[in-house]
Length: 386
Ligand code: NZQ
Ligand code: ZN
Image (cartoon, rainbow, N blue to C red):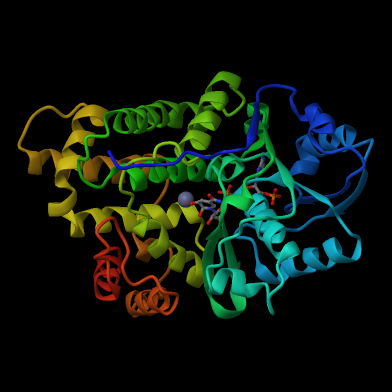
């Protein structure tokens, strides 16, 4: 096992009727900017609960943060933060609203020329404007980690950022919010969390037994939860398990002491940047080809996953590993997620080379746990995913 430090200061407040606790979690006297998305919170009762909990604070609202938060929208929110001298932000939404708020947290204190440099130059944020979150969509784990991803349509870019200054001070996770999530987003949530675990697990054996077993447990629980939550999102117990899996998949715990991959995410971000496909669906497009391409390097872990998660006990390491990739692809498909780029667009010829060049231009030319996913390999993996 590798050496590690585990730091996670987010106060995670989980369960029914917890939104009211916001009133004690935000420092007294704060001027609060409440940020949200396209309006789902206005139809499912979350907005009213948050407003009631904020009654003792001066609150300004900023609505309209879109899925895959857009830089030009966030810059408008940044103006509000500066003009109104905001001292606390509250993100109410899914990964996009929370990520947008993390960008603002960093940008509000940034002293460089342009806030875009935080993303373009991959500046690590050690101190940000404080913020909390109310999670409405289990998926990304953003409620308990310090990473964010921001998009810029104008230039077809989608770039990650982060740093220890960007953990939410608190996150309220009430599984009751799951009841109003449409089927497409439920599928996205399961697929995203599932892939987060694989990015941190599907590398090579490292004698990190507990990390492996925790990862396998999250995967198994998500497999159990997926058909049930899609059938009945108002089942609180299933929703609670779904929500906790998504947080645990990317709150930093399972990546400690082990090598991690993340190349599937970085390649997949290029698909969203170019075609606007939902984040989770881009992962389902890239992952099967990425694992097939790296079959020899990943086969031992793939076989372990086949045995422990999918109960495949027959066959050689290679046969089990092959079945593991097939099972993973069918799992995405079982939730109505298509796994080929050509199922989302007719205009895919030439994209592989564009994606490779774009990653290279952003300094991502040695991806994966071995640092051997170079631009030419990216091009091959994306072509295999057509
Ligand atoms: O905007 P509203 O009207 O709120 O609607 C949203 C949005 O259209 C809707 N929604 C959210 N909660 C709902 C709901 N609808 C009904 N009931 C509810 N309770 O769902 C739609 C999608 O929301 P979004 O926040 O975009 O989804 P998600 O949570 O999947 O976030 C995706 C973004 O997170 C990034 C992705 O790249 C993408 O930009 N990621 C962030 C990560 C992180 N910070 O750690 C890691 C991930 O790998 C990922 O990259
Ligand atoms: Zn993801």
